[in-house]
Length: 102
Image 1 (cartoon, one colour):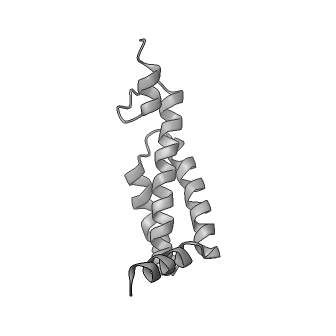
Image 2 (image 1 turned 90 degrees about the horizontal axis):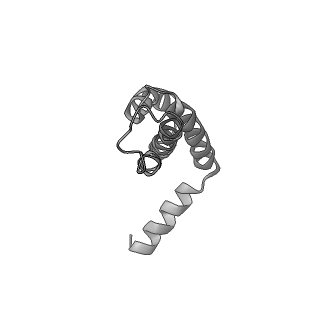
């Protein structure tokens, strides 16, 4: 397969209705779980990996779900780090901007 047919196949797989629904669910669950203090991104993905495989989805859909869960968790961690400035998360860019004058 040449380059353009590979790109077309990837776009077709990414825009399936099932995958778009999994992206929405993964980002929502990740944002909610990431906003909880104490649950890190790797914990959330590790907890949801068996659930994702138990759904008997195609492997592309499982990877789409776990990747969207990962990105949702990163966003959720930024929310809790911005609200709770006592944690001093180093990898939180919003927190580092708010602590420049402190």
